Image (cartoon, rainbow, N blue to C red; front, top):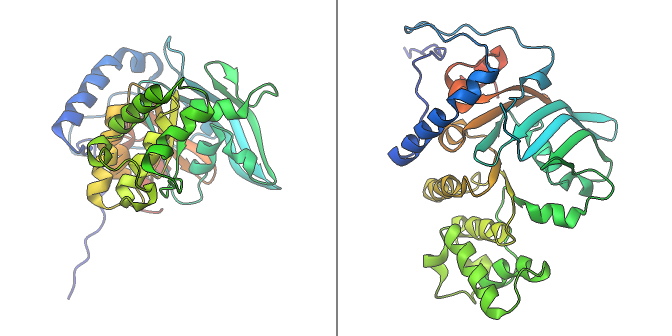
Length: 324
């Protein structure tokens, strides 16, 4: 007779996994550096010691209030009561959140919860969808990105996007990276363009693998290399924010580990927001995590708190596998 083991709730002693001691040490330094800021907005009592399961509060009726206020810090991007409609269907409901330039922010939640829809709002990719309408305000450095005078082309240069499936251009590796700087006029000559290509490929961790075959097609690379090429293409135009929509979902574990290490290295140079279905990945790469469910932002907090001491019952149910 097969015995089934009942799923145990998470406890305050639950560990958050990290892929390497380097990342763990860096995360510890980050937590120490922002401890004062977190103390300014959180009034939640410290969790009780001991192995007893956590007690979760009743879900708040106003999910937008869960967004983290920054104590004396200006966020790179700020969303205030953002709602998205596809025709008559409301896909996102009053989401408020902040993205800072020294942190990776992860968006998690079950399929269809609105996390990718919200990510696309941050560089107005939803403008390309017929019938899509966005309400609320989204600011980049204090400027409304939906204002009539906002240049969408320049916005998308400042807020780059890496998609779920690698999508290199049917051009050479060199041209994939050089295309953006060339059309935006970022290079004055061939030598300057060569420097941008090399720098971008180095930052994407791809230079040593492709430096001797830059004229080969980008589509001839492996899946993981193609995704890193797309990241190099995104950072070649010197963006301020990088959005990643499940960048590792189609990759094997080795390629995924390389992308995660790359995200860790890029943090600090860019504000990064990543959508992922992999909760272990969110725990490894992010400092802040936002949990979405049915178009609402349920909880936004430090990643370690989300995974070990969530405030909302729906968050606990999702991360312990009760649904999703």
